Image (cartoon, rainbow, N blue to C red):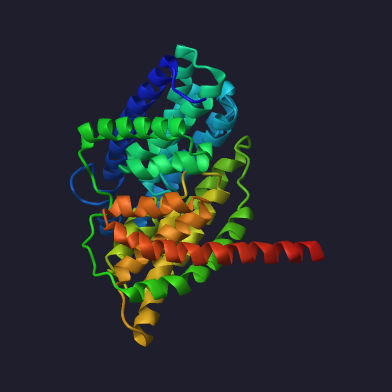
Length: 416
């Protein structure tokens, strides 16, 4: 397809509008649910991190047990009585199948509810899925041509990401790099249009929110040297993280026993949160600590291990959610801990800047979207684009090391 037809253009515009509205409504719902469970229903400027830190460990455990029950019962009912779920990737690959509208709405809202209550997974999958479900309706309404259906579905899903995180450029790259896997002019134009509309709509309701308003630390060449050597360390950590998740086989939601498993898993997460409250939620609480260097190396390593365990438990319980912010938190904590050792032996570097670099690289490798991740972190924080340099250096050595690790694993498998 070399140009956009009128029907396709109309579907793209409406997809952008509904993605923006979806992002707005789900964001507001997330914040109100967080406030209801952790601050007595008082919704204000207080962050989720401050909410969970202000309540007692018993309070956190109680909310997580309720969260486990909600997740277990909710997804049991969805799988038992709803239509079969279709992931965004499958919807893009096979757009003619569409997405079950009501079931997807329920599925997406349940993700937001559980993340708001403390599930350690990300919130970004819900707006992507709901936005894609609306796009499927527009495709049917306008009778969009078969060759354009994939384009509309991908742009709608990316626009959902743009709306919920206020990152239009990174979301455009996400669409092209991970969903469409092409950079044709018509694909670029469609992605820019849809994401731009979505972000404009959500800004009408929420304003131009910066996810991580951070001071701009000084930038020097020492950070580049650290980034070069840190890449392989992150690659090794990502490899271990991915291997661990392959063993977290989700329990079947068709079995009523999945409810008990979910309650037990989230109860364990609640116990972890007694010591590390910042593991609750998608990971923004931890990122706020690492990006501002508000904790020491020992607590950073503790949070790294705790978040890893919490994500594993939630995955094992069969909970749904994203991995963007959780992997950012893992990378940020690992990088922050390394900086304390680096600064003892070499010329000191900004710990906050290093944490942001580590977050971008861990995200890029684990989610297989290195270009998106680099732009995503800069856009989230409004850091100077000059910080793309250390991110790219670290990403380059990390990708090289990751390729080496994968080849080594293949050779071992072949020998066996």
